[in-house]
Length: 152
Image (cartoon, rainbow, N blue to C red; front, top):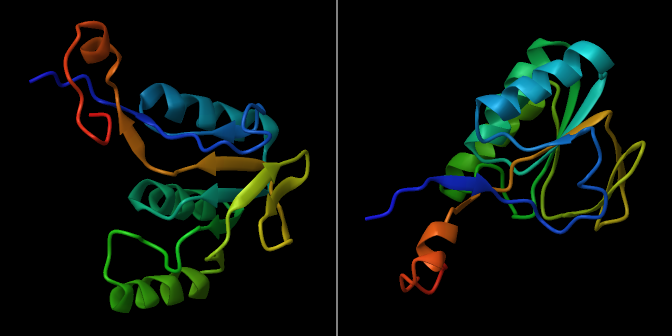
């Protein structure tokens, strides 16, 4: 067994290289996000992906007084839950002042926010990409280990 961990998935969205765009996988990522918040004082944030990490960050940003918008390409938030339960999660999120956009994808991150595939533009001073993780397989590849269909 080779257990080298995972890295955050960064979808091919124009603008992901901006300084105001983050992923959260480790303490270093968290420190960069915290430093940005302390230095730039963002008033709004968009979170692309509504898995557990995206929702945890959403809650913490709201507690800091930052307006948050969630963007999910699937037809429900919290893809790991059954759809009948996800409805209640979305209701709770929205009741707490978070905008939710489902069934849409981010196509570009601009100076002002995020452009969506449905034509909407979401204002955001910062963006968190929380689209899941992919296993680190470079060591196994280099060693000549046969990888599975999904690349792990």
